[in-house]
Image 1: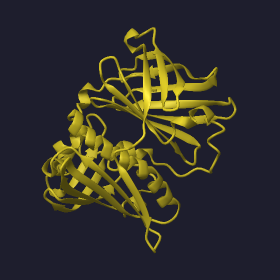
Image 2: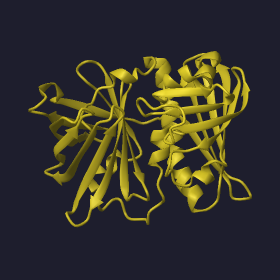
Image 3: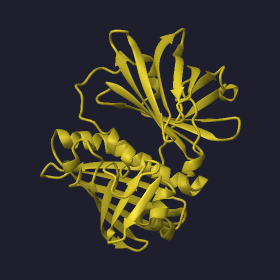
Image 4: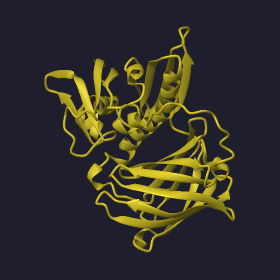
Length: 331
C-alpha cells in the first residue's frame, strides 16, 4: 500500500533474476491473478499472487471480508529443494512452514501459527488445482476444529484497478492507478484527508499534527503514539475539497530502503463524480531512474493497486474494525 507502514517496510532491493518456473513450478498458474473463495459463514477470502524480485520470491496478499488481512512470502530453499514460507497478519500473528509438490497437490505440511498471545496452533493445508480457473484448499487443525474446512477458490480475471506506467525524457517514471469507488466525492475526500477516514480503510491509527495541519501521521502498530520512528508521515501539498489531494511522504519507518528516493515522489489523488460513485485517479510522479527507482516502481505498481482495491471495499463492506481482526490459516 502506498502510504502505510506495512507497505513501506516490505520494499527491498532487487535481486538477481532467476527462472521462477523451476523452483515454483506448481504455483505458476496462480501468479498474476487474484483468487476468491467463500467460507461457510459467508465471508469472502481473496488471495492475490505475484512474483517478486524477478521470480526469486512469491508474494500472496490475503484479505477476508470484515478487515482481516495478511501476507505470505515464499522463498526457495535450494539445499532442501523445497519452498518455505512466512505469513504475517494484521493482528500480530505469524506462521512458518514448508511447501512441497506431490501427487498433484501443493502440500504445505504442518504449518505452525503463533498468535499475538504467543499460543501456537498447528494447521495442515493442501491445495489441488481442479480447473484452469479454480483450486481447492483443504485445511485441518486438530487443535482448532473450527479451522478445518474445504474451500474452492476461483480466479478473478479483471482487477477493478486500471494501471498505467510512463517514463519522462529525464528518466523519471510515473505510475497511475484508477478505480471507481462506490461513494460520493465528499466521502472519498474525507477518506484521504481525515484521521478517521484513514482509519476506516488503510491504517490502525492516524493523526493530524495540532501544530501543523498539513502533516498527517499514520501507523499499523497497535498502541503506537505520534512521534514513533516507525510511523509514516505525509505532508499535504494541496487540498481542493472533494476534488483533489496532493502529498508527499516526509518520514518513512526506520530502515526503509530508498527512503530519500521515495521522498521525491509526489502523489496526486483526483476525484471525479460518475454515475457509479467516484472515479479515483492516483498519480505518483517522480520515481527516479536507476536501481532505487526500479525497486520502488516494482513494489508500488502492485501496492497502489491493493490500496485502491481496499478503498473500494471500505465502501462496499464497511469500515475496517481493527479490533475484531481474527487469525486464520496463512494460506
